[in-house]
Image (cartoon, rainbow, N blue to C red; front, side, top):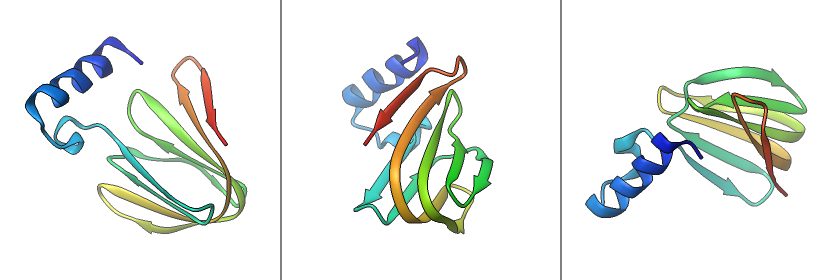
Length: 99
């Protein structure tokens, strides 16, 4: 986590603001069938087995089968399919995986 992200999180805790107010992304995973990502900056890659969403200082990569962009809105992206993994990538290609 960068210094700026760390500072944003500390400010949010002290002021009790919603994460969206500071531009922090929220990811809602529903079982292994659906994920909703708020506060994105666009889609970087989209194939049926991998969707990469830009979040600003990092990207989130959704991997699985039969992935589809069900909804693409100004502040949120809805993805459906069989989700196998979520990966976070920074600008230095550092990866953290949630399985």
